[in-house]
Length: 87
Image 1: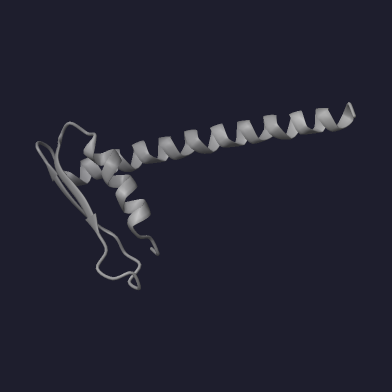
Image 2: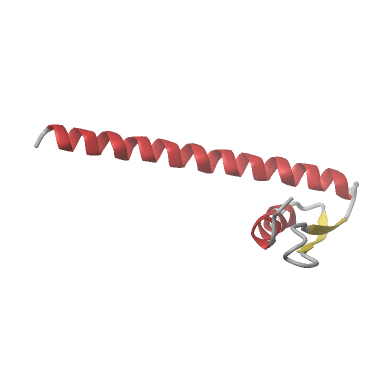
C-alpha cells in the first residue's frame, strides 16, 4: 500500500466522528513495511461497516477538496490571463 500516518490519521479523524464509534486508532509496524493498521471498536454494528462509511466520507472530502482547488486554480489562471491581456 505504501501509506503511513498521514492517511491513517486522516481516516482516524473521520471515523472517530461517527457516533457509532467507541474507539479508533492507527499504527504502522515499521515505515519500510508500508502498511497501516486501523483498530476500530464500534458501539453497535460491525467495525467493517464503520470503516466502509469512513472511507466513503473520506472520498467525499477528497473530491470536494480537489474540486475546490481546481475551481480556484482555473479562476486564478483566468484572472492572470485577463490581467496580462489588459497590459
